[in-house]
Image (cartoon, rainbow, N blue to C red; front, top):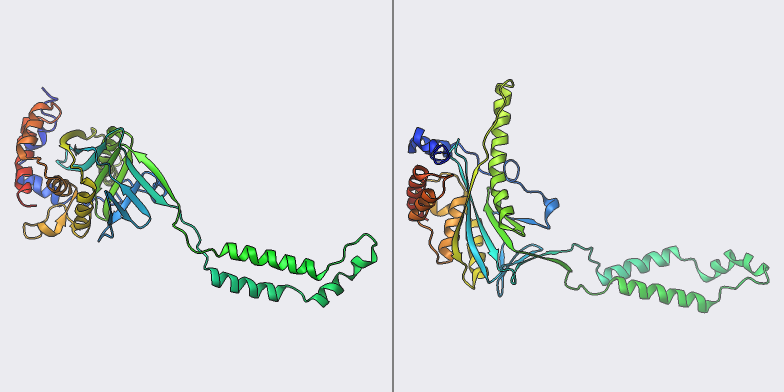
Length: 337
């Protein structure tokens, strides 16, 4: 019985107004505080920054800078939700789970130093002319070699051959620019999570890892709260239950999912991130939940309030009470975005 009321206990003790006030006081998730992101782990995650410079490439890829993502044309759309029963906060991410035979592909451009051919040849030629001695001076400096019977003399042909070898090396150094090399990786799951700075894209081999990413955002929020609480009262330890995770299968993605998703990313990155925007600012605002809604709508799929209610009824860790309230809030927001 206690398990059934675990997530509904927040709404059993509080009303909608108190829930709205809690959300308004929530700081936006950021790479500097609650979102797990590091540029050193770019092999498995990227940050699509606001206001956005995402470009679409036929047939189903998008890129930002030197990062290329090719979305699988055979994928299932999942919405992953983490819910904090103590604070009433929810965190939502969009996950595309690819078919085992058609994985997502992520390519990163390998940064290299580019050399201009003409500039390099001119600079190297100037350096050689300044550093290389004349024939007369070179013969004078090497005159000690002639004292030895077995010593080889430096002939003009040898100097000319060495000069030709040096010029060939310089020409090879300044070859015209070629397409930069890339490192391609294949992943079966791709998670999109909206934050203040942009949209985080995580790659994983299983959907459980994507659930842990969404859950880690809630954990980082708790760490910030515990730090503030411990500073006020160091004698009282802070112990919190882990956020509840729910994964909902929306359905199969359309074959043109890459093209549609690129447009969704471009439009969403142009918006401002706000937890609780006003009705007037809703079209120009976004957050992790609204991003998932807009993506599902763009895929011409549906995730309505009654789906949330059914999820609450069928999942013991959510409960009927939480499902009813969350479903009503979802449906109201669905009609706005």
